[in-house]
Image (cartoon, rainbow, N blue to C red; front, side):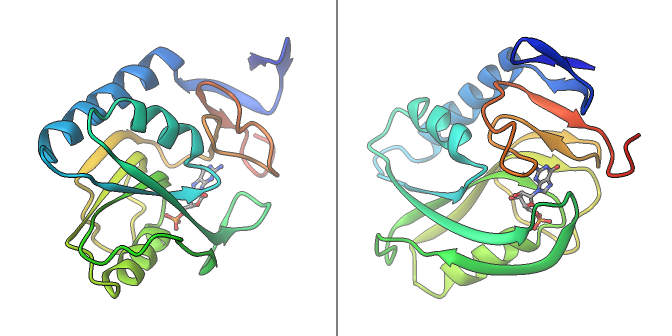
Length: 185
Ligand code: 5GP
């Protein structure tokens, strides 16, 4: 059990990634992007809502004049299982033609969301598209994914915190925790 908001929470099994480890990893990803995009002004495209803390922290670790825009897709409902169906709910405001785009994702599970986004953005003629994903679930990807920047590979359990929710809750936890399984174990 993990203590959050001043009391033990029986829904949280353990802290999987601490705030300290998140900060260190996000710093390393920011450094890599800074090195790789010297002389460029990449456009960070974050996927709402889960990627918001990662985007905010990552952007401040990139020492380049980045721009930021958001997309929202629906893949999970309020349950802890993916429907496998991905739908665009909010589109970008910035024209990405001829831009160096970096998709900033919170977590890659089946990879369906990411491959949907990559295909969708590719049709808009960007100069380049790369992916920066904080968490990758081990072995669950249904298609081969090209992820240039990745944070942590994690076991295939449902997790919350640092942007990730259950029914819109836990997004503001500063760490990533394992959530009890859907059966309550
Ligand atoms: P995928 O399309 O790769 O199966 O799923 C990606 C999306 O599903 C993520 O952007 C996230 O919204 C949601 N998701 C996948 N795994 C988890 C998880 O363990 N916890 C939470 N809260 N959301 C998840």
